[in-house]
Every structure is written in C-alpha cells, then in structure tokens.
Amino acid sequence: MTLGDAELDRYARHIVLPQVGGVGQRRLKASKVAIVGAGGIGSAVIPALAAAGVGSLTIIDPDVVELSNLQRQSMFRERDAGYSKADLALQFVQRLNHFVDAHPVQQRIGAENAAHLLQGQDLVIDGSDNFATRLAVSDACVGLGVSLISAAAAQFQGQVGLFRASPCYRCFVGDAFDTDDCDNCSELGVLGAVTATVGSFAALLAINALVGIGDDQAGRLHLFDGENLSWRTIRIPADPSCRTCASA
Ligand SMILES: [Zn+2]
Image 1 (cartoon, protein in one colour):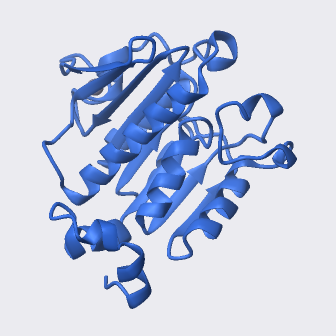
Image 2 (spheres, helix red, strand yellow; image 1 turned 90 degrees about the vertical axis):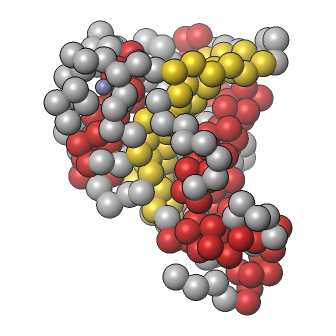
C-alpha cells in the first residue's frame, strides 16, 4: 500500500505528525471500516474518516432523510429529504475524497444479517439509535473477531467505547434490551452539537486504534456530559456469564 504524490500532499499535516507519519497514513489507507448508521453520529464519523484517508468505508443505513434529521445530521441538506442516507453519504464521501472507496448498504442490520454485512472489516463503528441493533452488531463483531466502537447520544449525554473480544458491549448493557428500541432520540430528544461531539470523539478513537496511537482503549467507556461539558472514563468489567463473549 503506497501513497502517490497527490496523497502525500493531501495528508501532509498527518504525515508530519510523529505519531502518524507515512506508516500511519498507509495504515489508514489499508483500513476497512464499517459505519452502522448515517445519522447524527455518522454525520461526524463519516466525514472525519473520509477526510483522514481511511481506504474503505462501508455505510449501512436503511433510512431516508427526514426534515427532523437536519438539526444534527450535517451531511444532509434540505433538498435531500426523502432520499437514501446511505446513498447520500456515498456522494458526500466521493465529493470529499476520491481516494476513499465508499460502499453504501441501504439495509436494516440485525442479528440475521450482521455477520454477513460486517465480515472482512478491520473496525466497525456503531452509531445506530437503538439497543437491539447495537447488541446484534456487537454479537456479530465478537463472532467475527472485529473491533467495535459503540457510540451513542441522547439529550445532553453521550458515551463512546471500544470493545475487542471481551468485555463486549453486551457485558455492559446485559440481555434485557435485545428487542427494545425505546431509547431512540425521537422520544428523548438530543442536542445536535452533542451527537457531533460524540461522533468526532468516536472518529478520533477509530483513527488512534487503526494507526496504533496512545494507550489501548479496549474495555473503557468514555462518558460525555454536555450540560457541564466534561468527559469521564470508566472501565467495563467482563461479565463472566456473558452469553456472547464469555465462551468466545
Ligand atoms: Zn460480553
């Protein structure tokens, strides 16, 4: 995986960083990342990873743009209402960085198709809006041996965690939510700048993990308080009876 002259120019502010350099930039180019959900969090993650030069982005979202999305989903414009988010995200990436291969998937991801849709990825970033999807994505990632960044925001609160093997996301939330999607932001509300903050943090976590920058963040959950403007970090203990990762 080499970088041409146009890429060396484009990524010059990355390459000059000792933590990244040409080696790190080539790692980003060689990376395949799937993003589940092109919503508020996806609208921060997808532009950041495309601009950073992650070589392959698979964007999974079954929905079309609604006017009520525009308050936080900054990839989309008024005239996009009614069109597929996955396809619009593809167009966004193509306009931003033609060195990135983007793959739109206009499907709802669930337990029945998650392993198929996510196989072959180096990293999955889940910015979906309900527990049932997040648990199905997490179970598939554990089964495939793929690292998962799970990011969520509601009201003024956000959380971002990196999970690899064990502990997994199910260790954190348990089994009670597999059929529950009542936590979505249409009911609770969410401030657009909070989803953007959480999504940008998830993108940074992804880049650090792909390049190998900083401490290994697996098993740590980062919690954002958007009212008092602070982050704190907790460790997620592995659940010895977790039905997904305890036997893995
Ligand atoms: Zn687990």
